[in-house]
Image (cartoon, rainbow, N blue to C red; front, side):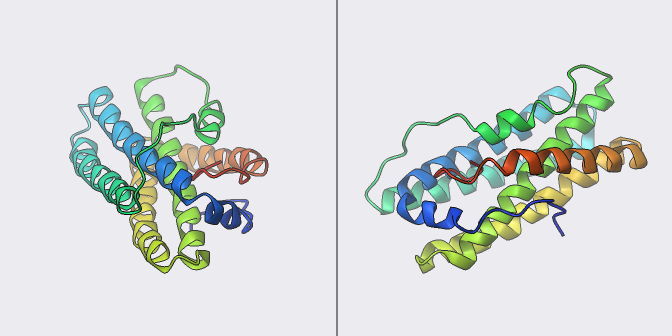
Length: 193
């Protein structure tokens, strides 16, 4: 369903199991960044009313996820650590050339967002199925479903606001590029890394 070309190495879960505090901190910041992305789309493309409406809802949802993750951190007696750079997103954002029309820029940003949500969904599925901590496994199952709906929403908006054939071609090229990125990742206690 997600169309990802390369699945995450299941051994990534072993890294997560040994670094729950780090993964929760990284996850919290991923939720915050997702909310920031939605706000940025509102600010950059206010004329797309349907998109703005959906992004308003997404900001609220992502911040509620941030709070849920933060609550888990506090519940375990930890504090929210510092944010770290996301090597996955940094590499991903190099794919499309800068510039172009506003519509092209919008489509590219929507495709990036769709792919990040798809990979997060795939990682959350893995956590929901493989984590020994059953409370966390259940938590990630719930979030996996949410990420899947975000992935389809962003991809559908890209197809709505761009030429469908061109968008689908770009999507496939981006998926191939992402597979090259992901093969060198999955060795860190981060959601995408």
